[in-house]
Amino acid sequence: MAAKAKKPARKTKALSPGQYRTARHPRTGKWHVVGKAGRYWMPVSDGFSTAKQAEARIKRQHAADRAALRELSV
Image 1 (cartoon, rainbow, N blue to C red):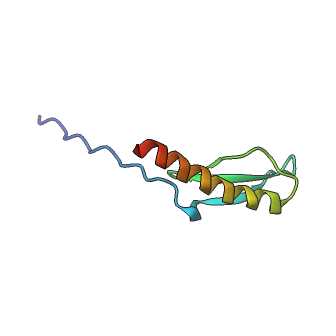
Image 2: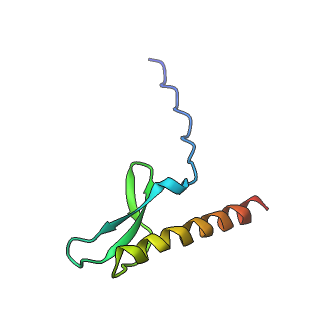
């Protein structure tokens, strides 16, 4: 019986600006920023009291992502 060929490792892509969104926690009522990680949405922030604060966090998160990518490319 022939051995199965291994699948090549899946390349991971950096998050693009459109891959963050806000979501409200059903129990606490706080707003969180969630980012796309593969097939799942994972929390990126602690809770905020308003959706506007969480949306402002998305802009800061993009800046943090760009800084991290610059640091890795050095």
